[in-house]
Length: 301
Ligand code: CP
Image (cartoon, rainbow, N blue to C red; front, side, top):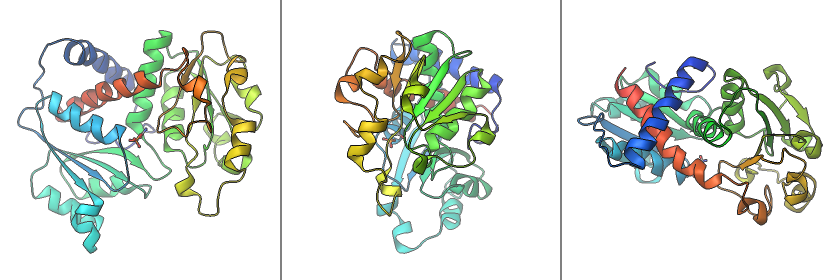
C-alpha cells in the first residue's frame, strides 16, 4: 500500500494488521519505555487546510515518538493563502523529499489528487464529507479493546451522517471486520446512498440504539450547513440526542463513543459524555497508537 486514502479499498486482513501493530506500539512505546525508532531519518509533513486538535496533534506526536522529523503547514500560514494550488503545493513538497504527507482538506478527493503529484506516501486525515480512515481505525481499536471483539457487534451511529466522513469510514471498516452497523438521525441529515452500503437507517433513535453494543454519536457539523440546522439544535437534542434514558435501551455493557469535538448537550448529554460507559478519552489515546502504526506501515512499504 503506497497511501492510506480511505478504508473502502483496505482489506479486513490489512485492518487487522494495523490494529495488531497499534496494540503492540501502545504497550511498548506509549505505556512502556521501549524505544522504536523505525521512522528515524524519515520526514513527515502534516498539511491541514481545516481545523483539528486530535488528528493533527496525534500525527505529530506519533511521528516524533517513532523518531521522524515532523514539520507542519497550516493553510493560513502557507502560500495557499497567496493563491498557490494544491497540485503546486504537492510538487513543492515532493521536491523537499518528504517521505509521508498527511493532509486534511474540505474538498473530498484532495488527498487522492496530492498523491498523484508526489512520491511520498499520502495519508488522508479527513477529506470533506468523504473519508477519515485513521479515525475509523482508532474507533475499531477502541471497540476491540473494550468489547474484546469487533465481529458480531451491533454498532449504532447516531447524528449528522450526511456530512460525516467518520461515519463513512466506520461503515467500510466495521463491515470488513464483521460488525453490524445501524444509523439514526434526522432525515435531513441522512444521505441517500446509505442503503446501498448495506446499513439499516432509522429516524427513531430509540430503535437504532435498542440492544446496541456500541453507541457512537456524531458531531452536528454546523460549519457545513450554510442554510442553518434543521431541526434546530434544541430540537436535535430532544429527538436525536443520546441521554441516560436512551442509553438504557442499549446493551447493559454498551460503550459510548464520539470522534470529537463534541457539542456538549447536543449529540450527547453531559452525564453520558462523562459517565462510566463513555470511552471518548480512550479513543483519543488510541488515536496516537493507530497513527504510529499507520506511519510505520507506510514507511516500510
Ligand atoms: N475526530 C477528529 O478528527 O478530531 P479533530 O478535528 O480535533 O482532529
